[in-house]
Amino acid sequence: MNQPPEEIILAEPRGFCAGVDRAIEIVERALTKFGAPIYVRHEIVHNDHVVADLRAKGAIFIEDLNEVPLGSRVIMSAHGVARQVRAHADKRSLEVFDATCPLVTKVHVEVRKLAAEGYEIVMIGHHGHPEVEGTMGQLDSGIYLVEDEEQVAQLQVKKPGKLAYVSQTTLSTDDTLSIVNALIKKFPTIRSPKFSDICYATQNRQDAVKLMSNQVDVVLVVGSKTSSNSNRLREVAERFGVPAYLIDGAEDLNPEWLEGKLRVGITAGASAPEALVQGLVQAVKNLGAGAVRRLPGAEEHIRFPLPKGLGLPHEAAAKS
Image (cartoon, rainbow, N blue to C red; front, side, top):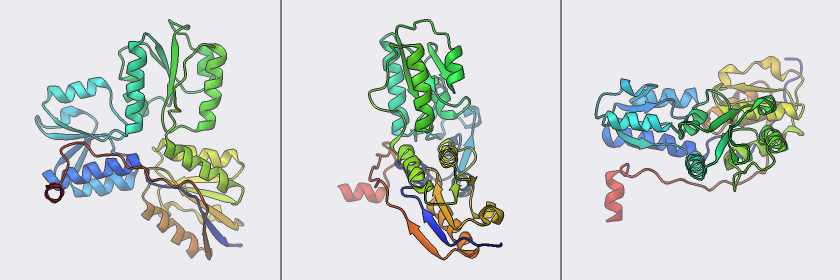
């Protein structure tokens, strides 16, 4: 390497959010309380390292509930599921523990409420993403998916005068805004959510990358390729003119990316463990970086409650 990096700059906040913490804890508690195997529908969160760790502890990840023996325990992933998936679980007499992020559940409730009031709904999101499938699956009809402004232009609805929109929680706020503006231009009376559907953690991590981007020469985002919010972090950095790379961890670092880059910014998606960040920090240090600086950022103190039935014996004893 001709000119090694001098400084590592860490975004704050980064990594696990409250919804991811909760989802992982649900699986770990179920394994502790009931023993292996515990079935999990879809990857609990979109991170290969997290999934591999839980699999080693006895979690079995499946996509089809027919793979789960009748009467077994199953955990629904943090992304949420469609109504028919829950109905299928009931039909198979499965004991369900719901790890759906409460902020995703909020959107599900919103969709059902709007439909009950006679609204059709436009969902802003990525086709095929499990959160989108789960949210759209709250209704049998009357919900439309758009991914960009071009699809808004082509959108045809049955009730343009009674239309509302919601969005996938892990999108880029900037991209969502442009699509919302296109929707408002085409459907001036479209109803917006009372509060933004973009989750606080997604917003905070994107804001942290924006702050970091004018202080670094390259950005490394720790996260899996399947992680929507991690991909958005890379896009935010690139939008600010900084080359950015999404990698699973230190093992994927290409030293050529850091050639001539004096300041290396590092962040992590909401489903990426801090241990992976620290491993990457060490890898960049091994290439010559000496100083590590943490940027100021939003402090997160949110913690979501666990589902009933997952308390451990010592906790029950402590309450009594």
